[in-house]
Figure (cartoon, rainbow, N blue to C red):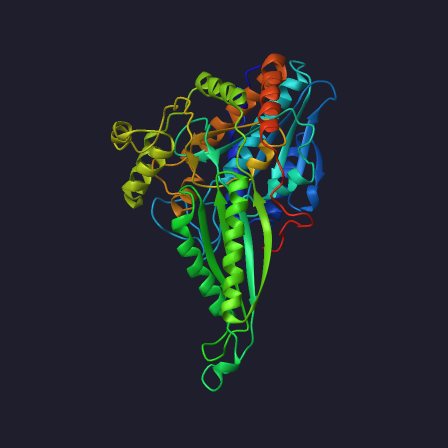
Length: 470
């Protein structure tokens, strides 16, 4: 059975689902309409639903198949980002000022996974393969670490192979690592006072937040180059003439490996404690989520690369090229150069790419020590089950991450072609691992060998619950 043809024949169903999720644009752990829409579609197709897994109302698992044979998991996401509301036009035009938007393409990410599992269902029904296909509805990838909480709860236990994808500007199979990450709230408690009449009686919690930020900025010189620390002040007081007795900051701390992350986080915590000592305040430190780095599985990646090349990259229409050309006027040139560097492309490659607006080829396998400058909770899944990921071209070259440009392309042909291509590649790869015992066993053996060499411990502290109220 040609699963790609089946997906193409049902293109309109998947495009409509993706557009519906794009319209909801719900933030992490609040994706109630988005998750229900996907659950309903899978249930109607005959999948068995388990809702609210891992204690997360918007997380679910949908399975189809029989007890005999391998179990293949497909990961899906559907959370949006704050402040990126955007119409489907090649210039900045919010639909609602300040509202969320799908600035990372997760409306497409979740639906491509549905296309792949529904296609594999056809092969199971026809008797071509035995086994089970499971779609995992994974909320709150953007900082909420939904999959990490699901992994800690054992949701992915017993899966032979997990596959996923992400929208991008290139078609490729990434062999690179992603940054392990902690998201942490620092709360400082002081003593209020009149800022003019008796400031000497006050102890400013805001001073503590600001001193901590200064300390962390001085720390940057002494961090490893691939580490990252970012922060925002979420609460800083209510009036300038009142010494704030409470202030709060939200930090994201990242490093290439979890052991490096733990070491860096210890230093950040020491700076927070020092800021509290300097200001006569007290500090409360609360880790709200954590994500591990990626355990790359080359065996899975080889199959994904082969299927990408076998199916072939999609070609874009003249209208889509025109849309991308107009949108590219808002994209800084350095955005393309930066993304090209991550994929190991040299100056000659970049010069050729600058002649294009959309990528219609497939990058060769790129194995490197370069670390992707971002984090993903897919990392924790990769430590629980052998996992592979692909990227497909859904955006104009150079489109900056988490931007209105990405939102604009998520509800039109550019993104939709990449989405369906991802669904086809994952479906073909899932079918291959269900049929090819040798390839599947090799992937599992590689996973066991790599995991044995580096002990995995969930970065989420014991007793920490999913931050459903973030």
